Length: 326
Image (spheres, rainbow, N blue to C red):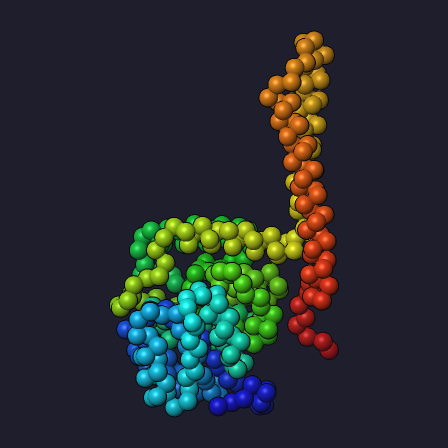
C-alpha cells in the first residue's frame, strides 16, 4: 500500500474509494467485485499506482457488517471498514471516510450498485485535464418519476443560487483531489452540496456523463418529502454562509433598513392622505409601519450580535483558500 507521505514520488498516486452503506447486505459483495476489477484495471493502465476501498457502515440493521467482514477476508488488505454505532447519516459517513482515507485522489459512490464503477476511469481522466473536482451526471436516470421531479426542481434552484453549471448534484459518483478534502467543512446534511461548497471556495469543477443503473436489490433510503425540505434549507444556509458568513451584519442589517424604508413610505403616504383628506387615523397601514420599525430594529440588533459572534469564530480561521505559493 502506498503511504500518503510517499505519494508525491514520481508517478505515484494512491486512489481512495469511499462508500457509505446503510442496509445494503445484498449489494456489498457484488459492489466489491466490480470496484476491485475496475481498480486493478486503473493500476494496469497507469492511472493510479495503488488503491484502497473504505466502506462506512452507517449503522445498518441488516447483515451489511457481516458481509463486509467476509469481503475483508478476500480483499488482500485493500479494504478498510468503518462501523458506526448507529445511523448518523451520509454526511457523517463521508466525513469519516475522508478522514481515514490516504489517497491523493478520492472517489465517492453509493453502495446500491446504481453508480457504475466502470466510470471511475473516465472521471480520473477528466480530473487529469486540470480540474480539482469532477462530478457525475446521471443523464439517463433510473429513478421514480416523483424523485426525478424533485431533483430537477432542486437542481434549478441550486444553479440559480450558487451560479455553477452542473446538472446533477445528487450523483454520489465524484472525484476529489486531496487538497479539496483538506479545505472541506462537512456538517449537517451538506453531502448534497459538497461540490457547491468547493465551487464557492474557488476550486475548478467539472462534470461528465456517467452510467446510472436500476436498483436490483434493497430499497431506496430517500422516500419522504422531508428530504427535499432539508435539502432546500441546506441550500439556503450554504448560500448565506458563502456570501455573508464573515459579514452577517450586511445581510440582517439590509433587511432591517429595507423594512424601515417601507415604514417611511407608508408614513409619508399617510401624511399626504391627511393633507388632502384632513383625517389621520391609526389604521392597518400605520400599524404595519410601526411593526416594520420594530422588526427592522430587531434585525439590525441581530446583525450586530451575529457580527460579534462571527468575529470570534473567524479569529483563528481563514476566509480564503490558497492554491499555491511560489
